[in-house]
Length: 357
Image (cartoon, rainbow, N blue to C red):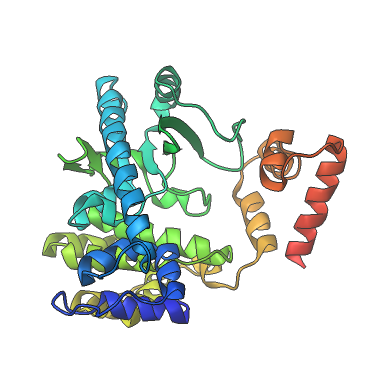
């Protein structure tokens, strides 16, 4: 975690009775928004000020409105999925905000993540299409990811973005660890969403895997991801904690958990996190997962994806979708262009090579 993230963690860790005398400087306010903790700090620390000297005031108004509008759409969507007998659970931001935070808007969410049973894929996509959703990507990869993005306009610029997953992770090396049917069956029902969410022990493991994948890709690591885990580990019952330890041992992912938990303990100390770290350091681990602890490497990620993709036809599909996607995909990333498609492909390949050098 970067220095600013550690500073923000220190503010979050303050006692609820400790209030900030004035809004933080503009740089820290902007960083708090990027790290996903601005609304938490404003709410927890009762930050004073007006929109003139506090960027969080405007951000607060935008997020509250978006959350209210999206929440109604999420309730409707979950209800429709249930009515059509589609098996699913809610993951990540919406699941965490509905169970760990006093107010759902305090935990920013860019989209709602749903894990849907693969056997219900066709029916779920038909339901999305008949209810005003579209694929913002303009095309659907068949090989490089096991999820589909859907989007529905709601009010003005507010949209409901949905990531429809058919595996808990796109990492084919880890997919065998997570049985989708079992995850759905063990989900916890949350009346606030009218749906089941991923159970707490598996939610914690999912948080670890999600964070490490972003880290291995060289992405920006948000403080809110660690705060989610801090709340999760401290909200677990004794039974849930034992289940978490059992799953870590069974999957042999203790080194992954220990790596993330060591940072968690540093940012948000707690007895529960200390105990998890000590236990994880003593549990067995499979070295084949250590790539998630290595320095970010696009080359390694690409070769690993090809390695775990079964069949030469599928491997060729991965290469084709990665190197030669439709024109809309390229223009979405690089902007509109009058260049011939072959020139855009060459540009994409050269750019990719530069990133890997």
